[in-house]
Length: 163
Ligand code: CA
Image (cartoon, rainbow, N blue to C red; front, side, top):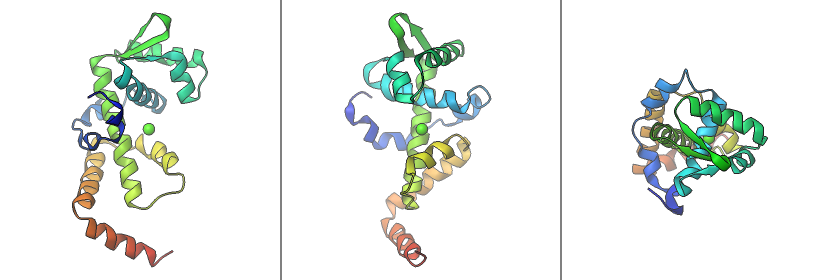
């Protein structure tokens, strides 16, 4: 599961167990989800991420990032160690993986719909507001289009009539 190619891996599109996100729904704010997704993105490569780097990537001041990481620590999702080192717990890794998969699924869905403008901003807005059931169905639609590219072409042609 390590290596630079991982963010492009199709594996992310077919991760099971989004239900974990529904269970955590009451516990995690949107902002906490963003943290967990980013920690996962980085920690899965290196095994850890430093708090300063995390703050920089999320465009947040280090003391705010520290506070949030401490909260995530209390929830048992990360370990905050000396020298600003943040590691995922096994539970945190599961959640992080599901959050990143969710991000990729919504991104692919919007790409299939030919949303180009502000693609990532749209992904960031939508991802926090789908439950596991809806996400699974969106993923199946993505898979359907991937398996039937001719239908995706028909959709593109149809769309072209309206632009
Ligand atoms: Ca995201």
